[in-house]
Amino acid sequence: MTINKLNFSLLLLGFASSSFAQASYSSSLSNKFTKQQIVDPYYGIVRYNKLIASIGGDSIRKAKDGRPVQDWVEDYYVGGKLLHKGFYVDGTIKVFTNYHENGQIERNFTSTDLKHSKLEVFYDDGKPRSTINYFLGNAQKQYDFYQNGSPEYIEENDKNIEFLFKRNSYQENGSPISIFELTDKKKKTYLKKEYHENGKLKEEGTMIYRKDLADYQKDGVWTYFDEKGNNIKTETYHKGNLE
Image 1 (cartoon, one colour):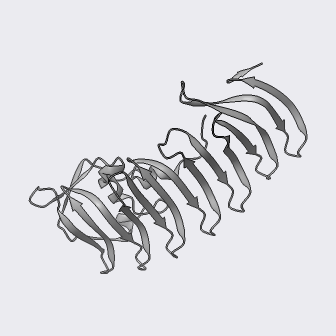
Image 2: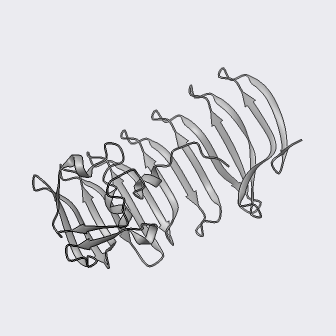
Image 3: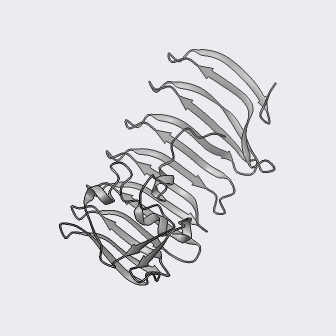
């Protein structure tokens, strides 16, 4: 099953193109940065996410003497405002908070235990932008929001992240773009709907989760519509194959 959305979570993890995405970098233990140096215009302050080993980060922060950073570290904007406060162990972050230059929290990472952690990202007005709950380093639940508060993307997996409960995306006005939701947990059957840009239903049908293939496949009747809502064709599938 292919997802068309450029998943914001990839950038939350710090995979955006950046001069800071290195295997290691030095620290004066009190660095100062301009907003242009540290803040990506769209993805925000992703520099530190590469230091979160528990969710896939592969970088280590080192002090000027070359040793991995330990204990609490703070970074600042050039103007003196707090930019980052994190607790480091052997150069990797265990918990941290980043701040917008206006003082609002930009993102916050916490760990509740060895298995569970949470990353929250906020717009500069304090409204939530994204929340990701992790289990053993993998995203179990993700919620992305537009700045007006409307949901942009929702993904929920079972507790062991073996299969999806839902994966939905929406336009900024609240109209759905794509809906994919579990309808029968035992049989692992799903209802899938795709929509035209004008909000009209484009196609809908049922899918199944194939554990043997670790994939979702069309299974059952699929109906397709044009942008005016007219039924243009109907197809029947069996385990991904058109009958």
